[in-house]
Image (tube, rainbow, N blue to C red):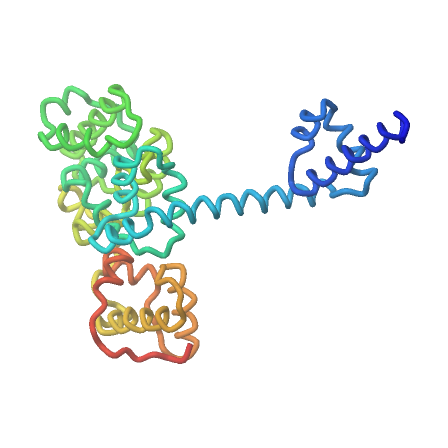
Length: 344
């Protein structure tokens, strides 16, 4: 029968081997030490003595385990809700709208997990519903707001209360409904819109370019925390949304009643005809079907480059989106024609 010292030595050896194995599998020094009642440094010494995994190897293992867990979580979500999401997408719903509907009925859904899973699912969602959440008046209000910010005007609440249209008071709070906005923030926004409109009466030559608008939007959206918990593009709307709604940037400025920018993006089909665009859609759909890949926007760019290299010039991703309005709308509007397809 082994004596007590031998037995204790065997137990210690078993313990040390267990610690080394657990560390190699990605468990942290802290969690191992906490279970055995020793410091993380002592665990590290034991693992090193046994020739166990180094710190970089253990970190890589933890990362791998984390990614596998995330992948399993996404897969579980898609197995349960993927068919519902695909059906809603086919009916024209955007990804945030689908998540909102699912969350309302299944409150235990984790929004971040849902968004991550659907973003990588290959399901084509329509973005038009996000753009249409803003009324024309709300879009114009965003232009006035950022113009006032550009001019560093002080909010003019009195002028706003007396002169802003009813739409500003009715629609703007709704447009900001997904963001964390206080009453004081809303008052500042309305006051700045009023100040910009009043300034334009005496200075009709003022204007703002689309590029500057977008820069200010990104700054002020972050400053006000105007980021929706549901992932919806927040107010003020993007430059692209403004241009799509009014047909161009200068057209939006005309709607405001101020001077147009010196340069505006030419409208219409410049490098490609409508037939070229339609043919690209059909050819791309044939390509993804033949190769069993997702018709996601990420797969269009490499395909278009390969086609161009083979002598078949294709419109860029941005050109396709500008013409059709959204990637989902582009894929749904593909004509029933026989495309000219270059070899893959």
